[in-house]
Length: 64
Image (cartoon, rainbow, N blue to C red; front, side, top):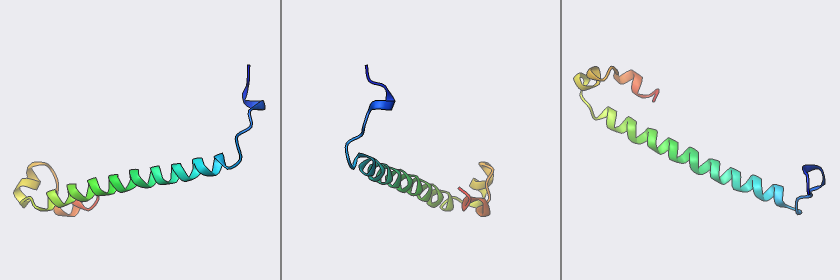
């Protein structure tokens, strides 16, 4: 039975894992940014009365 103290990772595996994590995190951050951009765009298209109905002002939209 192997335990963590005697398992050796193949050469370069840590670098590959870090590269994969980097691109996965980049993709996630880009998706989050794009979703926020689409939300802000939709909110900016609303009238001031509609924004008031949902409890927002134009100044608060940028914080989203």
